[in-house]
Length: 192
Image (cartoon, rainbow, N blue to C red; front, side):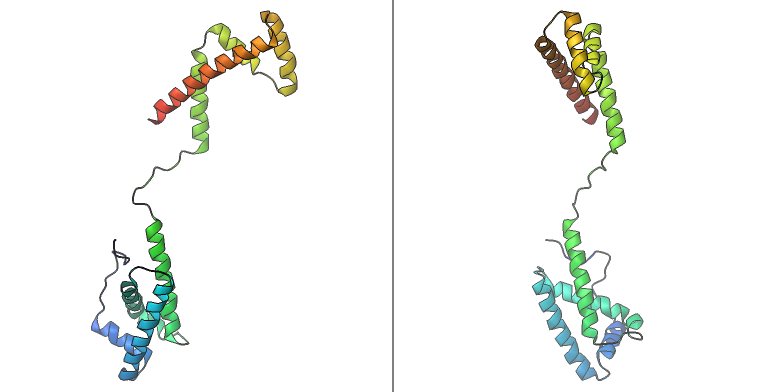
């Protein structure tokens, strides 16, 4: 398993950064050391509560981040520094979880819907173009008009062809199945 610490982040502190951190915790070096240990233990509990696999590494990362920013934080910060450490720890948990969710393989961006529609329309037109002239005229007439007009149109079409409406439906189904097969083949070839 890879380290939860981001690659861009250096794991170590300078002596000055660590001294500044202790100074922020307490002006008495002995008390500052005690507070530092209390904060470490509290951060370990925070990461354990979040169920993190490497809490020690995350505690070090949290302390290092805070220590690097003490110079900016200290002048305006009011309250117990432990709260600031816990806030940074929470942000680190979010980063670690986000890092785990990012897939290692980048997937291609989806094609915009308009382009897909255009491509599908082109494939359908190409497939219709492969039909015989009679079948092409038939299928275009069969699927022409809206619902109410279709019924009358199909009755008239059956009469013109001298077949029953059931035979008309069977012919339409056969042609539609061939068009669907042609369409799928062309669409698969263009994606392949």
